[in-house]
Amino acid sequence: MSDESGTADYQVSADDDAVHSSWDNDLEPVATVEPGDVVRFECRDATNGQLGPGSTAADIATLDVGPIHPLTGPIAIEGARPGDVLEVELVELEHHGWGQTLVLPGELELGLLADEFPEPALHVWEFEDGIARFVDGIEVPIDPFPGVIGVEPAEDGAHSTFPPRSVGGNLDIKHLTAGSTLSLPVAVEDALFSIGDCHATQGDGEVCGTGIEAPMTVTCRFDVRSESSIEQPRFETTGPFTPTGRDEPMYGTTGVGDDLMAAARTAIRQQIDHMQAERGLGRTEAYMLCSAAVDLKVSEAVNAPNWVVSAYLPEGIFPTE
Image (cartoon, rainbow, N blue to C red; front, side):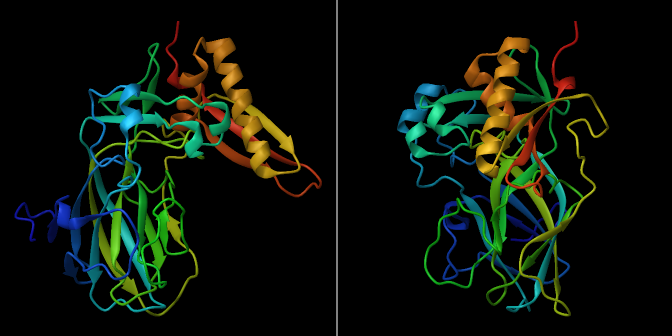
């Protein structure tokens, strides 16, 4: 599996024998690498190729959710032991020119407002010059990251890729972009690392259940730290912390209530109302754009009995007059 290009020590293609859709510490590693090695992973899109650039919302009706989150791996890191820390430096992420944002049928309950959006929807994005193109001239800057990145859990058996875990997994941290380093607690011998579900970009919250899902190539460098331990993932990143990488005008909506999830729903619902009234978007279009570009933030969590969640919409994604 050596990469003859010279940019990586190993290349792992997204072949069937290197792709899996559950966490299971009984999986055989597809390669064994040393600390310090660089590995280039080919990653399929989140639907495992069931949808593509020519797909429409009608195709979602036949979507099989079983193979969703196809992960490339696992990779064994020689010498990693339970209690160690696996450091994963994200060296490079290369998209393949397109991505998609889906609203799955409401009965699947995937999405912050799944009960309010029962009908499936799909937008296929074209990428050009660092921009993903939406409707009405809206352009969202892209900065790719892996949605699912982690190591195998200590618990035996097959486990769903949907919930995030203490050993990583479906973290959807949009700031894990190129140049970032993720630290993961090792739970099994040789760590058994896998990666996938790459996003061209995403708003904090991924509120419709998907970001801009995209097939991608991800290059990682691995290291093992045995002198310290952690219980949950940690990371170092330089951002960017706004879509353009600089301070920019935002339009914020808020949710105030005694439950943080309910407050988040209110904040997004108000943002959708704003984009309908002021930007002329349809309700479903606004929901998908929230998932791709709006950041949810906990503004206040100390003044009981109510908490505040704010939703930040970058105004620079809209065309100027």
